[in-house]
Image (cartoon, rainbow, N blue to C red; front, side):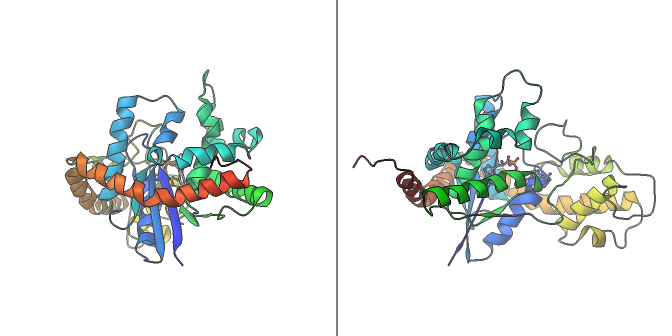
Length: 329
Ligand code: TYM
């Protein structure tokens, strides 16, 4: 039996190292096991939940697809665009009809993104239903995500169980997997806040496409503290702890062990910068080739779409039937 693995990434900005360590590398590790069938989705419809510029979205979508492929997804996983598989949106509506308004307004990301705004897109409220549909339509068992998606994953399992109980067993109930060291990489300039694609001015964010010189400069300016003796203490020393977690994740060891043999913040920063450049250089090289060939990118995206569509349609048909919607014939 194969295990179905699914994850999604929004084309709302350049991918940063938190996305890579929190979601992409865990997916690649799972894809190395032939017992897993891995699906990775550019969740372009989710980018419509906040103000957006159509030309920029188009460009970011292509760049995200190229970056994911450059990380090594092809041929280990199916990569596709969410909007190219309409079963996602169809199932989203069916799930909205099992979810309650209060469940959606309780979501922390909804509260954060809607706070203080005059106009909030309705799709921002219903976002978690579409995210649940993304996962459930593919009968997903395992969802590699960073820490910030836990609440959405919990809602997904709630909706799956509720549907199965009320209308019959249609959905596999998924579980999230979150890597220990890299579940929540923090901003280098503000180590109490999550590193994100959007939101900060980028000075504390390592983008996957940052040039080596930029990486070195950003790491050098990371916030630390004056204590020359390195120790891992996320509460008292968040800057050092974040660099240790980053180094641990990049070199596949624990944050504590990553500090062994290093003396002083400057040495830690040097080690982090070296590990980042080593990890990102081959990805950047491959990215340059892929982005220069949009026709090939589109071919790979079509192939992904065609590979995942038949099974997704079967799930939606089963869900429609279970909910009592009559087939026209
Ligand atoms: P998105 O696009 O914001 O982020 C993509 C993935 O990267 C993880 N991540 C991080 N992990 C560790 N440290 C960080 N600083 C960090 N920043 C981001 C996120 O947790 C995520 O796994 N709602 C989702 C996209 C989505 C999705 C899905 C994911 C839509 N449908 C179905 C999984 C399954 C989002 O906004 O991710």
